[in-house]
Length: 89
Image 1 (cartoon, rainbow, N blue to C red):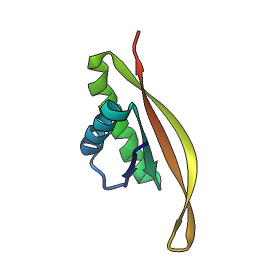
Image 2 (image 1 turned 90 degrees about the vertical axis):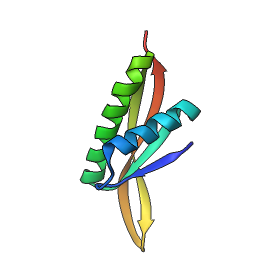
Image 3 (image 1 turned 180 degrees about the horizontal axis):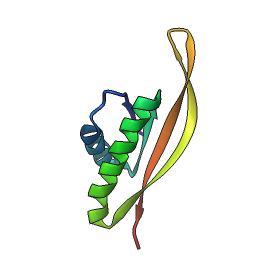
Image 4 (image 1 turned 135 degrees about the vertical axis):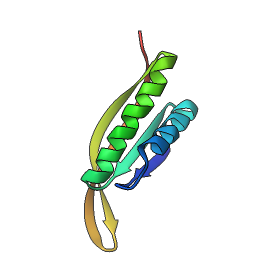
């Protein structure tokens, strides 16, 4: 599965394009964020991607969970968002 790393400086429109491209290829994508600003940008990107993909009769499902990462010897906790596509009835 492909992982996208989103920061507080990420452009939600560019991230939404990346989400859509990966979804079209694989059907799901993981977004990794560390910090409130990064999570905010990721959520905005998911909302934009969802708006675009719904015109094709599809919707996105988001499953959040925590993950831990070691950054320069410091243990940090982030939020991972598993985004999956589903058919709209």
